[in-house]
Length: 137
Image (tube, rainbow, N blue to C red; front, side):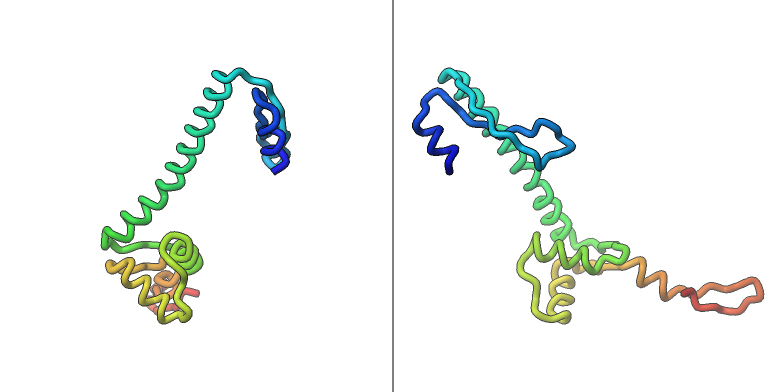
């Protein structure tokens, strides 16, 4: 808010936030610059383009989620319960209040089924050299 107030009272000046060291993205510096009207318009256009690119990049995952849920194909995960909870919460809607409701939602989103390789691996039995079956732990 303070920057906007200063900017409004100082025509020809613009204030930018810069990150001097990309490895320390949390350290930002505010820089006041005097620019001509043309330079201000060019900087504004670059800023608008950068924001649009960021928006479209983030929208890209939304498109992927929509294609994934619309495909009807099976989904394979490994120990993916929390991943599915996270994705459903952030990409679909609020989570149901119960585990049963969550299972129904996953069944609707992925009618081809969800296969968890961790669970499948726990159910596999292995024959040893003597021909005895041993449960894999």
